[in-house]
Length: 362
Image 1 (tube, rainbow, N blue to C red):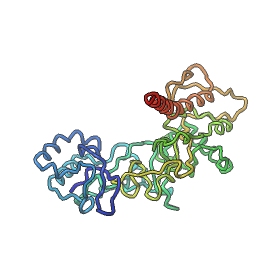
Image 2 (cartoon, rainbow, N blue to C red; image 1 turned 60 degrees about the vertical axis):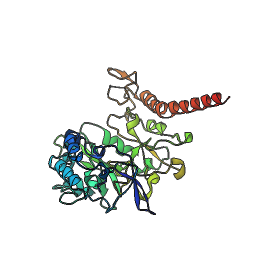
Image 3 (cartoon, helix red, strand yellow; image 1 turned 120 degrees about the vertical axis):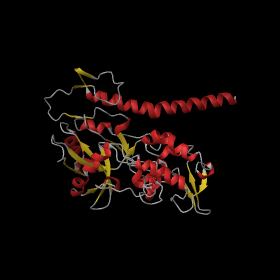
Image 4 (cartoon, helix red, strand yellow; image 1 turned 90 degrees about the horizontal axis):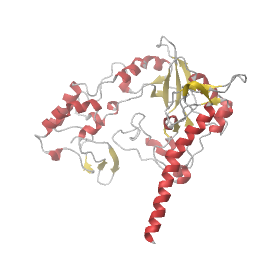
């Protein structure tokens, strides 16, 4: 029987694996599959729909292998149509594979030159294979550090930015020892030799979005350490949701989470990762990332103002390509917006709902 969804847990007693409810199996296929789904549906309409797994709890015999001939044919059709092929973004990472390997970092099998999909020539379900998971980021990818097997994040830094300089400065050993420092550590950096215009790569911890999983308690609001970065004469200039991340490894235990599909475990991409709460683990550290448009004011005689309108938070009133403005004030505004959206607004709604509930009781 073909698994058409990622597994969320396993009941060892009856060997039943729990699946997330998925009304159509196309949910876990690459986006381009939608183009061909009418063909698949036409094929499947001729079969007993009971053969499809779309209920909350179903037995999965023989693990993740396909036994239904029509389902086998459907996936072969999709494979031949290129629905599981590498994207343009992924092909670029494949081109970097050998160079990154020479620097001591190995990308996942999907990015090996000459990659052959695990499921090809077998009756394995593609969605059950780790190397079917698509990677979407053109700037950051995970890799195994060969010296110790640690999974890290590799970021491609374009030329003509100060990101590598600023990130490495804030990651100096004497600065990392400061508990106020919430800037992402840089393990390693080296030139991007394939880019004729220059650029570099940096290796960092593998992180997650700061609010994934969501906060469970009001007291889990965090200290992001803005005072420290400003004390080092650095203005981040883009302190929005996407550039504040956390080291969530302690929340996910030994099973971890998959780098490209972080809802799933690292060990089995059919199983939903089940994190502990921040309160359960006691301490989770949060980091500022992405210093691509940051400014370092290491010259005391230089005015501490900038121009530019690049930012994820477009609510900042000062942004201008003509009129100079204070980037440190912008950092305070954007970080305040993060707190407002994710903490203040949420807590206000909770307290308001609680007050309404008490009023209704009266």
